[in-house]
Length: 98
Image 1 (cartoon, rainbow, N blue to C red):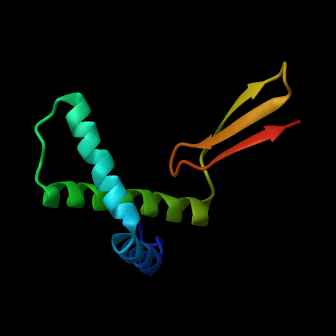
Image 2 (cartoon, helix red, strand yellow):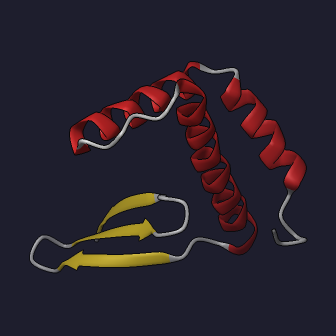
């Protein structure tokens, strides 16, 4: 983990996530993914740990984007005068009309 990463912010956000219904929604999403792909279903505790791990990784990436800026990729539609910006690190996206 990088030394400049604001760990208390990540930990605070992760603690709030663990108390929210978003955790249960993510566990349900993972359960559905395992079922749809025909994979062996892990225990609820393993699904919970996987959801928390994914959220921690995303929060760490978000913190990097907050401190260093987004890693934006742009796709343009010159015919309609629009651009879509997407950050491969944290998932930020923005649609721009020019």
